[in-house]
Image (cartoon, rainbow, N blue to C red):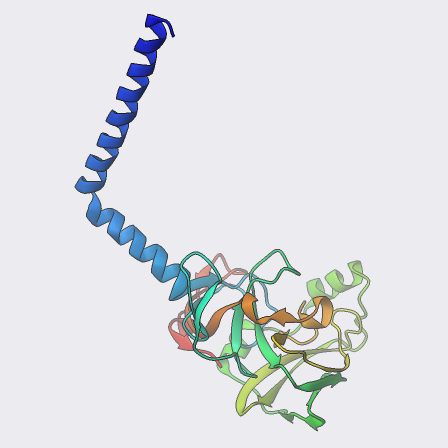
Length: 264
C-alpha cells in the first residue's frame, strides 16, 4: 500500500470516529427529544392511533371526514412498529367496529365485524341471518345528525349512478336499526339500487382465525362481500370514539356535534 493510500485510510477512520463522536454528543444534548419521539412511536404503533375516515361506507355510524381513535390494546399487545402479537387480550366480537390492514386491499379500512369464526351466515335482501336466526330490525332509526348531514339522493347523485350504469328505479334512502350481538346501530339502505352493492351473501361458515367485515352503508360498501374475509392478525384495533369531524362537502366545516362522541 502506498504512503498516499495510508493517509487516505487514516483520514477515513478519523472522519468515521468524529462522526460517531458527534452523533453521541447530539444524542446526549437532545436525549429528551429522542426519548419523547420513541415514546410517541411506541404509543402510536402499539397502544393508541388515529385514522381518517375517507368514505361513507360506514354511514350512518361514521361519516366521511370523521377522525377516529383506534384502541390497539383492545385485542393484542404487539411489538412496536409491527403487527406481531406478544399477548392476546381478547378476540374481536360481532358488532365491533374495527380497523384492519388486509392483504386483499391496499388501504387501511374500517368496518363492522358481522361474523366471527364458527358462525354460519347468509344475507338475503339486506337481512342478515347468523346461525339460522335473522337479526332484529326496526324502522325507527332517526337522529338530528342524519337530518343535518345525510341528505336524500339529489339529481347529481342520480346522474352519477346513471353514468356508472347503476339502476336508479324508485331511488330512495332508508335507515333501519339493526341489533347485532346486543348492539343497536343504524344501517343505511339505498332502495332501488341493484348494482351499487352486493345485496346478498351465500350461506357460509366462517373458518378459524377469519372474520367477515361489512359496512353499515349496506348497499354502498366494498367489504367482505366483495374481497373476502379478514384474517385475525390483520386487525389493527377497535374503534369506539370520534375525536373530531370535518364536512368534506362544506369547505371542511367542523361538525362540532361529532366532536368526542362515542360510536357503537
